Amino acid sequence: MKKLIRTAVVGMGVAAATFALAQPASAASFTWNVGDGTVSYNDGTDTICAQAYNTEGSRWVEVKLTPVNGGGPSYTWRDSNTSHPGGTCRSLATAYEDTSYRATVRTYWGERGTVVSRGSRTFHS
Image 1 (cartoon, helix red, strand yellow):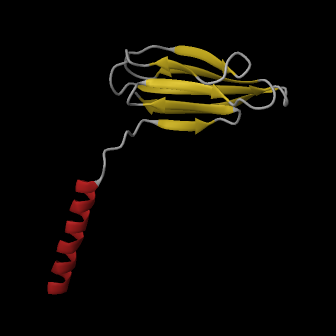
Image 2 (spheres, one colour; image 1 turned 120 degrees about the vertical axis):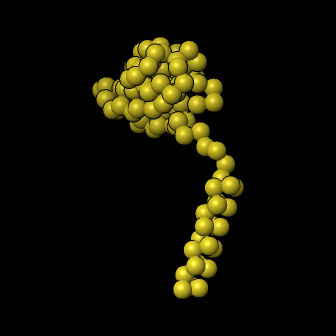
Image 3 (cartoon, one colour; image 1 turned 30 degrees about the horizontal axis):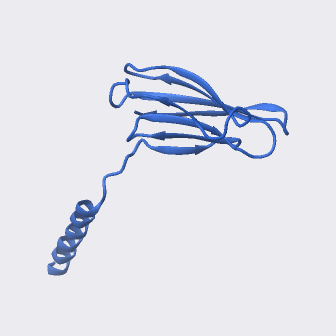
């Protein structure tokens, strides 16, 4: 019985230390590889960006962003590697905190010659 109590106390101590030492995570931030580029959200700056890979052939990444609950802006935009290098971003700073968003993505690559639906991802701003 003493061993069981000692094991339980040690286990609770380890769990408490783990919680105390854990750094807070920005749970909503992500980077999503969508085949012909990336879509990323930075919770600290409330920005979502699309970036087409700057490699061979014409490429673009299109994002349709809509709030699922709460208030906030809706956007549809496209980043193309033929118009400029780097990503194209939109601000969600005017959205209420913890607004749920759905990002639906399509991409294009000239070498393939087709538009591909990359699905949707839901996240909180």
